[in-house]
Image 1 (tube, rainbow, N blue to C red):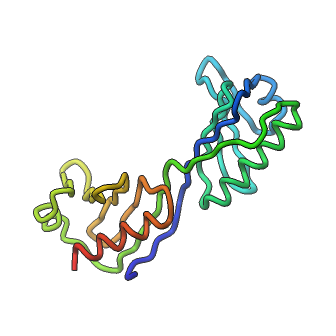
Image 2: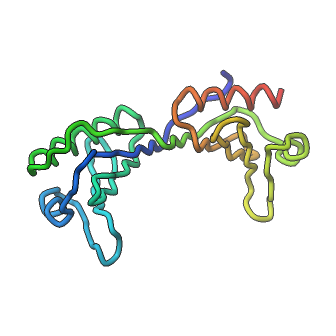
Amino acid sequence: MDAEYEINNVVLTVSYKDAELDLEKVASALEGARYDPEVFAALIYKTSEPQASFLIFASGKANCVGARTVEGAEKAIENLTVKLQDLGYDVGEPETEVQNMVASVEFHRRFDLEDIARNFRHAEYEPEVFPRLVFRIEGTSVAFLLFVQGEAVCVGAKSEEEIEKGIDRILGALE
């Protein structure tokens, strides 16, 4: 691969089956948690080791964002699970699913965005709106925001393999 990437954010959904959480109780027990039901129906909780943030809902569902690896997100979820169990909740093992991985990519080459937009039907380019081109990877939910300097942001991937396949497709298409 002639490009390098770094994952910047991993988003997972978390589901504690049959759990009803008292968010006031949970917020008072988790250091740094914020819960204001007048503003938002979820509890906001950030962890530093590993780094991640949670939106926790009374239904036992949560979103984990901000981790840089799936393993880091899973460790943060494991730590949260233990804290909920310590509070007396019978949450069991949560179901988790990767929803999105965001990665920055360096292609080590410049892009002619207008040329790409003309030659690829799955490319969207509106420079007067934003100076990047959206290059969608057909058959997937993955898209790359390509910049003239050869940098890109990959969104919509659910695994590193999808990121790597997308990079390979772009490199193959633009040869």
